[in-house]
Length: 364
Ligand SMILES: Cc1cc2nc3c(=O)[nH]c(=O)nc-3n(C[C@H](O)[C@H](O)[C@H](O)COP(=O)(O)OP(=O)(O)OC[C@H]3O[C@@H](n4cnc5c(N)ncnc54)[C@H](O)[C@@H]3O)c2cc1C
Figure 1 (cartoon, rainbow, N blue to C red):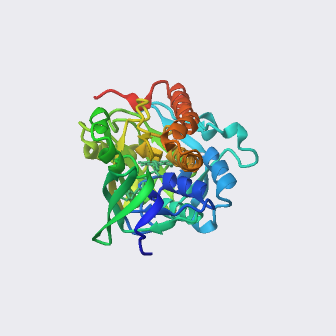
Figure 2 (figure 1 turned 60 degrees about the horizontal axis):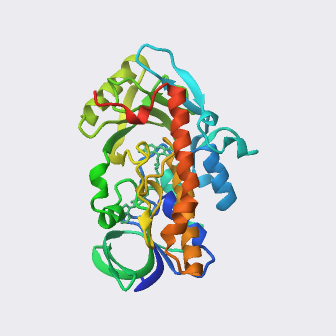
Figure 3 (figure 1 turned 60 degrees about the vertical axis):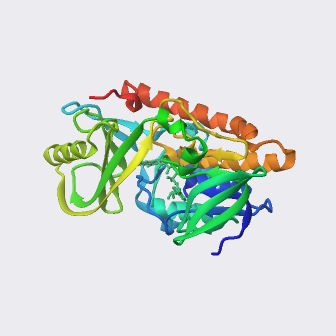
C-alpha cells in the first residue's frame, strides 16, 4: 500500500495497542495510518496467551477470533508456580489475577493460546486504517500544531503530516524517546531471552510454568508448550547476565523436569521496561499519545489486554478531541486512568499470590 502525504492520525506499531486505537477510530471518517517497521505478519516475542479479560475485550470489540490465529493446546488454565528450587509447585489459575474475570460471563476462566503474529495481524485488519508494513518511524517535528513524521518505507525516507500521533511501538518506544528524550533516563530496561525447542519435557501442557528461583532468573523464568514446541524464557536486570541465567534455567529443566532438546528452532532477545512495576507512566502531551507498553501499560504479565484497552482509550480520546478542539491528552489521561488502576491491582494480586513483588526483585 502506498503512503499518502497526510493523515488525520498516524499510529506507530501494529501490536494490540495500535490495533485497539485503529479499531476505535474505525467508521469515524478520519484517515488513519498504522506504520509497522517489520514485514507483516511480524514476529513478537510472547507466549501469546489471551487472558479471560482479553477474550472478553476481543469478543466485545473485534468479534470471534478465527481458527487460524489459534495455537495448541488451545486453552491455558493458568500459571503453575515453582517458588524456589526444591520447593513444591502450586497452581494459580488466571482467575486469581485476571481483572475482569468476574465479568467474563460465559467465556471461561482459561486463557486462549494464540499465535501472536496472526493475532495482531487479524486485530489490525478489523479496522479501516491503512496498514503499511516495512515502514519505520524515525523522528518527528512540530509544524503549526501538526506532526511532520519521518518514516523509512521500504528503505526510502518519506515524510507525512498528521494532526494526531499515537506511539504504540512497544516497550522500547522510539516515539516516546523522540518526544520525551529525558524520560528513559529514569526507567530500567529488562532484557529477556528465549529459545524454542522441539523437545520432550515433563511439564503439563496447558499451563504457563513460572519459575522464581533467583539462581535462574532476575525476575521470573517460564516454560510453555506452544504448537508442539517448547518455549523457554528468562529475564534479568540490565546489569545482570541474561544468557547465564538462561543456561542455568535450561540446565535446571534438563536435570529436574526431563527436558531433552531434539532441535533448537530459534532464539530471540527483547528489552522490556519497569515502567508499570514502578507506576512510572508516560502518556504523551497535546495530541501525541502513548498507548500499550510505550506508555507503561502492563497488567503484570498480561500485556495484550492492557495494550488493547489503552489503545482503544487513545482512539476514543482523539475522537473527542476532534469534536471538542481540546488536546487529546486531556481526555486520554481520564480514559486511561481506569486501565492504570487495573494494572496496579493486578500487580498487587500477583504479589499476594507469590508472597513478594516479582517485578521489583533486587539485584542478586
Ligand atoms: C516473553 C514474553 C511473554 C509474554 N507473554 C504474554 C502473554 O502470554 N500474554 C499477554 O497478554 N502478554 C504477554 N506478554 C506481554 C505482551 O507481549 C506485550 O505487553 C504486548 O505485546 C505489548 O503490546 P504493544 O502493542 O504495546 O506493543 P508490541 O506488541 O510490542 O507492538 C509494537 C509494534 O510496534 C512496532 N514498532 C516498534 N518500533 C517501531 C518503529 N520505530 N516504527 C514502526 N513500528 C515500530 C513493533 O515492530 C511492533 O509490531 C509477554 C511478553 C514477553 C516479553
